[in-house]
Length: 63
Image 1: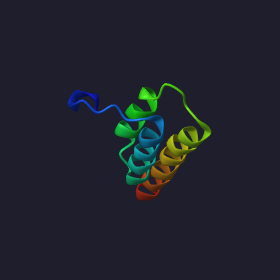
Image 2: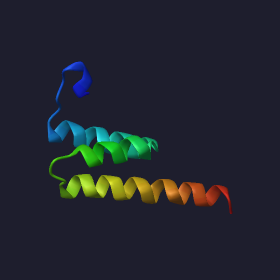
Image 3: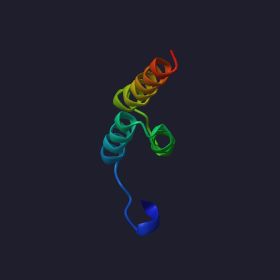
Image 4: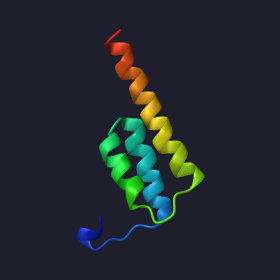
């Protein structure tokens, strides 16, 4: 996002983090989480929920 001259605020990055975590793109979600200057309770909940949700779905496929 910075490469195109747009520097998003923390609210927008957190919303994108939630979007990517729900969609299952945990690599991008983790990258956004690491870019945050201050992590909030909402960003922590989003990254943890995304990992839990997708690890449960992957686990169900193999059992």
